[in-house]
Length: 200
Image (cartoon, rainbow, N blue to C red; front, top):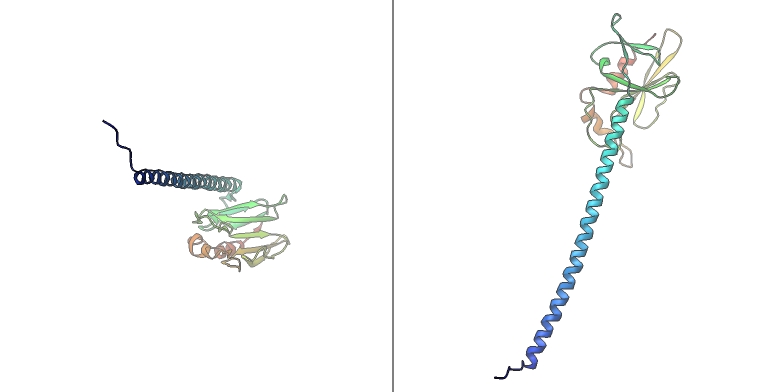
């Protein structure tokens, strides 16, 4: 018995199906390759984001390690800032203060508090509450303001600059600080305590 020879239209249909199948497989390969590239880019982006988060965490740890606590003078119920040679009354606000002296002579100090509630990533941080110095009371940036000065008994003047809620035209803002991070302690409260400073 002889095998039947397929008809010409059947062969053409079979060739068309094979060509269509090849085109579909090529499209699937291109799509899979594109999807693979997107997945790889997402993995790279996630790794970069994780690295940025780690750097931010390590920077915060380094910052916290650099902070100093004022010395408690228990008999006098005072806190001593030795670099500035000043004391403040010991109370519920001042006992939470931490600072960093920003120059070798201790003339400038940045003040923060353990009462801050700031665990968000922000363009502008909320941890800086007050800056004090013995040179002038000029604000250093648009998000701080002169908050007063104290004439000390040794003839020096202590200038106080406090952080404030601020938003600029480029979207930088510390407005969230006032409603979120500064809920338990405010720059004004800390500035008011420094207005009670005395020479030591």
